[in-house]
Amino acid sequence: MTTRKKAVPEAAFSPEELEQFRQRLLAERQRIEGTMKSSRSNLANRGPRENIEETGSEDFIHSVDLSMMAKGSETLQLIDDALNNIRKGTFGICQDCGKRIGAARLEIRPYARYCIDCKSARESQNSPRRHA
Ligand SMILES: [Zn+2]
Image 1 (tube, rainbow, N blue to C red):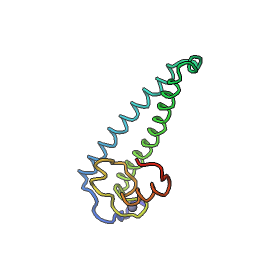
Image 2 (image 1 turned 120 degrees about the horizontal axis):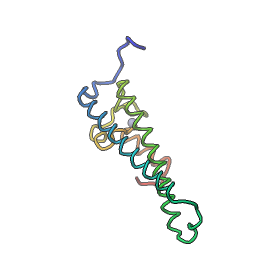
Image 3 (image 1 turned 90 degrees about the vertical axis):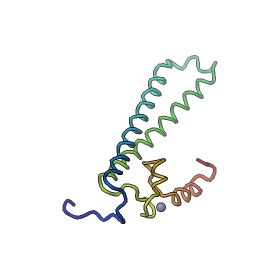
Image 4 (image 1 turned 135 degrees about the vertical axis):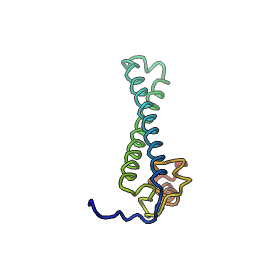
């Protein structure tokens, strides 16, 4: 798999554009890693669970931190996938229908995996209650 030309549907992005996306993905990854690190130390610094019953809100903060970290690592995974796709030349291709993801969408979410159509189809299928 070294000499074969990659079969990209169309010339999706120029090398310069890809480099810009790459930089943005790396910056986003750093930001998330920073956030997760501070969440983790928040969790660590909170000490034993003794006082938690009294305050109640501690539990809330705790679960916010936890869900943020879960979401963070999810996004990190997406970012790594996107970086891989940049290397493989498949960046910006919808993983469901194989069409190109709109540039406007990638501007907002450079690690998007699906085009807007597949994304909204998935959302209405999987979690009808969520309107993210
Ligand atoms: Zn699609």
